[in-house]
Image: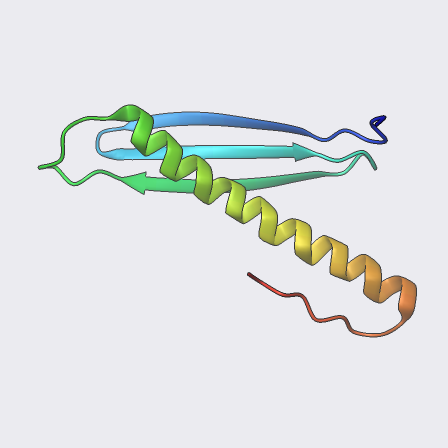
Length: 90
């Protein structure tokens, strides 16, 4: 099986106190870029587990990208067909 296209995803994490933030960048093969954000909050009584905060914030940033990618795809479908398409959000 050969690869037809490739996408590049970058995630950058930041930690401030009990808050973990993630900035996500998706570079698509058509040259466009989508940017997503995700956050996680640690309760003060929870033990510090930076990896868990990164996983939650990263997952939320990727969910943001997924939503944007669905919107982009449906906008392209609408433009091509001249009809409104209905994205499934789950």
